[in-house]
Length: 134
Image 1 (spheres, rainbow, N blue to C red):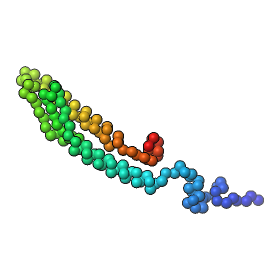
Image 2 (image 1 turned 90 degrees about the vertical axis):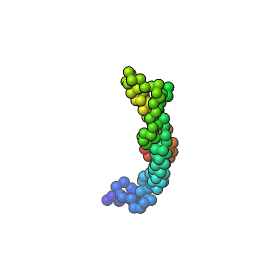
Image 3 (image 1 turned 120 degrees about the vertical axis):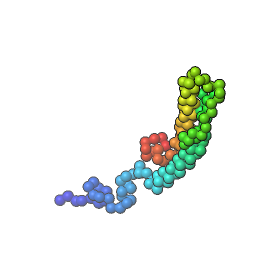
Image 4 (image 1 turned 30 degrees about the vertical axis):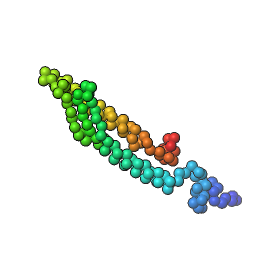
C-alpha cells in the first residue's frame, strides 16, 4: 500500500509558519515595512498638500494689465485690473483678459501639483508591490 509523505509533500498542509514561508519563497513582502512605508507616504502627502494650499500664485493676462492672485487651495485673494484695460466699448476684451488671467493662475497651480506630492515621494518597496520601478 502507498505511504504518505511528511510535511511539504504534495497534498499535505504545511505544519508551521516556517513551512508556509518556505512555500511562498522570498517574494512575499515584509508587511511591517510596507505599513511603515505607507504611513511615511501618507505623512509626506499631508505635508505637501498643506504646503501647496499655502502657496500663493499670480496669473496674468494682457502683459500684466489683469492679474489674479490665489492660493494652491484655490482661495481667490485678489483681482487687479489696470485702467488701460477698461474700455466701455469693448467689455468682451476685459472679460477675455480676466478669464485668461484665471487660466494662467490655474496652469501654475497644476504645475505645482504635478511637481508636488507624488512627484517628490520615494515610494520604496511599495513600487515593487504595485508593479512599478519603486
